[in-house]
Amino acid sequence: MKNKKNLSELDDLPPLRDVIEAHDLRAQKALGQNFLLDQNITDKIVRESGDFDGVYVFEIGPGPGGLTRSLLKSAAKKVIAIEFDPRAVAALQDLQARAGERLDIHHGDALAVDLPAMVPEPRAIVANLPYNIATPLLINWLKDMRKNQNTYGFMSLMFQKEVADRICAPPGGKAYGRLSVMAQWLCDVRVIYDLPPSAFTPPPKVRSAVVHFVPKTLPSDAPSFAAVEKITEAAFGQRRKMIRSSLKKYIGAIEALGLDPTSRAENLKVEDFINLAKLLKI
Ligand code: SAM
Image (cartoon, rainbow, N blue to C red; front, side, top):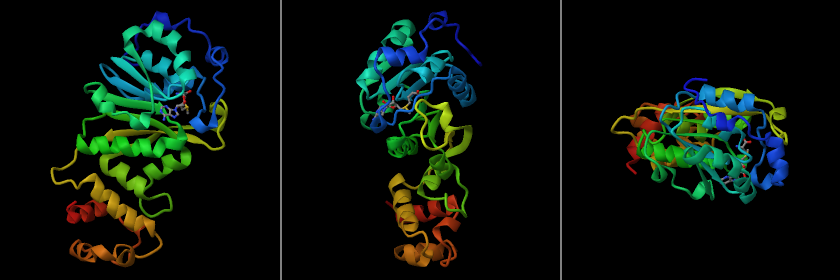
């Protein structure tokens, strides 16, 4: 592993299954708990994510701490783990004692935490996300990136495969939608790891995939996040309609940009939505 830390204090940790049993950390569906217990898998997620040297890494939902262990073996400056379940917070204390100040564990709701306010740049986010709140979490972080493209140097996030496909989808198909436009406007995105249900304990019903996000440099006249949200909501809210109907209010902008009014939302490129949003002036 690149920049691997020699952390012998992490070598003799108990197996994750023992941690789960000792802390009665039976998976709760309501908290989106599907744990990764195979260190080869979590090491690979970290390895494929890039260079952690000197980076403050947020992990959302560390659970019993498998991915946390792999992150602590990297050259990251610090791992900041945010966990909602008090049982998991208790289960991580052993790891905390060994990692010392390289690990900060916060008990709280990741949806309510202002990550950039917690640590300086360079930052990254690596997480096997709770699937029930994965999309709103991603939207929050994309908003952070629109405010400042350096907010996170990269993000490696595990989603249900269907959501990962939507994030990365090109125009022209059913998977292409609001999430594709928002994510691809702000970041280069690609799937770095595709996992079957059997990789998790307990196994979810669907396949999963890790998407890697690297922020793009935005021009100074980039539209606001709200404008892109508004135009994509209108267009994909009625995705079977032609844009002359779904985006009727913006017909002047459609004509000014020379877009075909008989196109449907899924046939517009990301840059078409961005150019439309620029004309909204919100
Ligand atoms: N990282 C661990 C792993 O890979 O084995 C656990 C991943 S599990 C899919 C999702 C984790 O997110 C759980 O530990 C769950 O308790 C936690 N979680 C759920 N909702 C949360 C929230 N609102 N804020 C922070 N953590 C949350």
